[in-house]
Each structure stands twice: as structure tokens, then as C-alpha cells.
Image 1 (tube, rainbow, N blue to C red):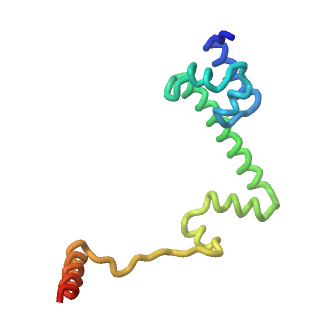
Image 2: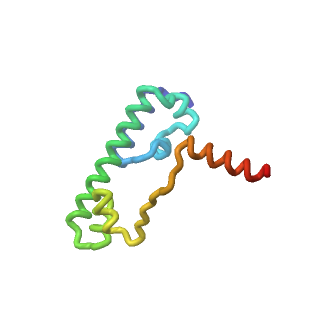
Image 3: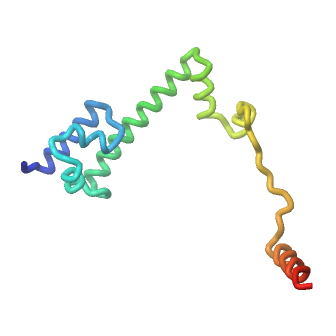
Amino acid sequence: MAYKKKEIFEKAKDAITKHKLFFIEDIVSFLPCGKTKFYDFFKVDSNEMNELKDMLEKNRVELKVSMRSRWYKSNSPALQMALMKLIATPEELKILSIQYQEQKIENVLSPEERAQKIQELKNKLNK
């Protein structure tokens, strides 16, 4: 069956808007063509593909904002903690975290010191 690129593109945009899609793979399931034909029409870096990706990203952002808003208004401690972890500073995360582990590297050798230590070890091995 012959498909027209412009028609497929318009159907893809309609599907994204109507069904609030988030992924490219989801678009294909709403189109009359297969995945191969879809990718033949819309190459990865084409203007059309970028427009579709922008629409998908807009849906994701709208959902994330909506979810965070509901979490903020919720009385559920789990949702409020999830939101706090998303918006917290590193210091606040440290306070919130049960198993926070700070990693400190001590006694770091400079390249010259490291070369000297290696040479000393080689000398000991050669004795």
C-alpha cells in the first residue's frame, strides 16, 4: 500500500496529541504503516522527526509538572518525600538519606610522588 509522507506525518502528530504519547515507538502503533516505513519517511535527524520528538517531550514535561503538583498537594508522606528528593539540594539530600555515604579520597599522590614510590618499589624488588 502506498503511503504519503505528509499524511503519515499529520496522523503521527494527531496521535501524539490525542493519546498523550511519550515515545516514538508508541506513534507507530497508531499509524497505518509499519515501523520500517515510518523510519524511511522520517530519518533520525530530519526536521519532521525533530518536530515529533519535540511534541513527545512537551507531553513528558506536562506530565512531570502535573505529577509534581499533585505530589506537592498530597498528604501522602511517600509522595512528599519523592518530591523533596527531586528538588532538594545536595545538603538536604544528605540529611534526608538513610544511607548517605560521603566518599573522601585521602593521601592522594601527585604524579611525581607516585613515580618516586614506584621507583622505590622496583628498587626493593631488584635487591
